[in-house]
Length: 111
Length: 118
Image 1: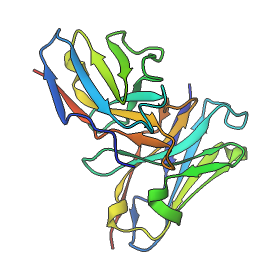
Image 2 (image 1 turned 45 degrees about the vertical axis):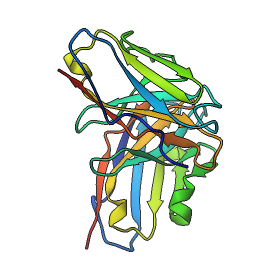
Image 3 (image 1 turned 135 degrees about the vertical axis):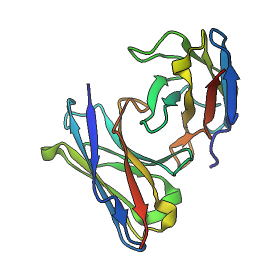
């Protein structure tokens, strides 16, 4: 089972909105509303920002939102801020023998 | 709030066994409700799920690591463990211990770098 596909990089200016896609298959993203998203700053552990496609953990800014259509999930960051510059990874539960598949990762740059 | 801390050798020789411990605090380790997982990240690369364990001892492992992975738990010490046998340079990575209260990873340890080298 291959990693979920994400764009290598996405950039935006402060205040803008950006969207990161995460493409899987009908065996993972397409079959379950169990996509989560993680933010990772350099040298730090990942941090959960979205779970179950569109739910935000307590304490995560409402500028982060998630959605899904077919085999592709998306993370949108609105009102982009300098602190949002980080790597972002999606993850999906799947019905294959690899229960959890991560995305390839996207580097977000705030211009 | 659950706090996790990895510990173990930072350097392992090729063909030997990598052994890591994760100590958990702040959570109901033995009362259920959480899966305890290991995830690794190769230098400059993405995340890879290694496997998980429930407090009862039931496990799930990533088959890409074949039978090299053993995950176990000691509920009396609020700890769970990772053993990865027959390591090669390809196993050099930052290893994270993580908790899952659902189909997602909510609390992460700080990570520990394990280098496989002679």
